[in-house]
Image (cartoon, rainbow, N blue to C red; front, top):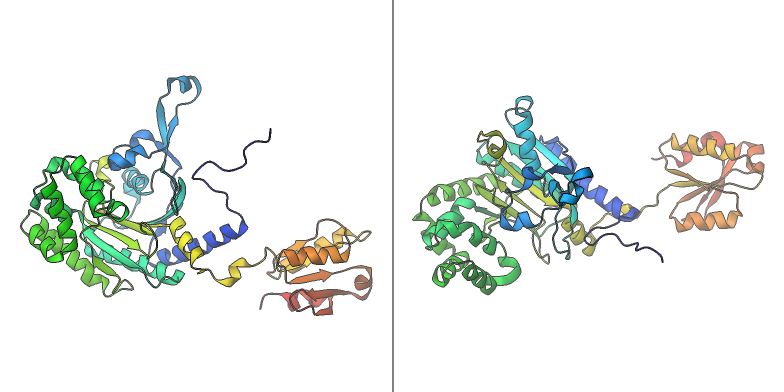
Length: 434
């Protein structure tokens, strides 16, 4: 019986066209991040299990892919490693481990896959890439403003014109929950419910909060505040920490107006973000017609201290590559030349002709910057031309016995049908990139 050929659920194969699109998006993201002064970093796919557990809240911990111990410990059923859930916790570990080698203000970008044992859905996979930027060492709102600017520039460069960036603050949410009469012991579980608002709606969140022990009146007051900014401001202003958090948000909004994020960022009281390590401003970038966001992040001043024992300010933003690709594909946003062939030129090969001649010609053309394929086995010219056309190759170079005798090659343009003889010494110049 033939074996199953589909990849594991929530995982995917990427064919050449898929990879070209991914590389296009990643190249734009990397270029923008570098121009904002972020440096590259990579971390292992596997982390010690204790590095990840306890960092993501009750929902996140359930989604960690755990790895069984190996060798003589395999039968124990115990786990000691896990696939990384995100790029932020590994960064915190790296900063704690290498703090003495890093600059006072460390800015890094990281583009690598992460794994979550989640339920696959449109734009949601179990293996996916995150494109992170993080700034370590400062509590200044300039950090958030620069991140919002970089993310806005990335999305603008990719062709998005209708995105918004939602901004909130964890202390505002705490002040709101306190002001609505929700006891602190229920705050974390309440935020898990609130984070589902876009997915399950107001009634669903209210019912979820009640199931978690929040009384109905308090839950309704919180949900009312999300829909009435004046009510939201009145409640948080009366609770401890609310006024300072509101001032911090106002400072970020003001600074963002001086950047490419200007006009894109708005205070969104209902924004919660489920990860438990956030301590300050939280952010999400959203586009219409997509359930969920294309990216998000926030300030997590306490996370690195879980590894180092020292409170180190930190803030980050993560763009979800897969969700960006889903929207760009559906909207046909990719440049036309991404559908380009794997080669610009194909060199033909005929029965009885020296194969070395074709290989040498191909290398001469590659030296000019062209992408060159060689038909791998002798065949009729018609079949070779048909194959080149099916691959989207523009030019076919024919160098048979007649051409060699004249010191020429025949160049055929498969797009126009034009065919001409060119001196062997000139073919690279004629076909080379302009």
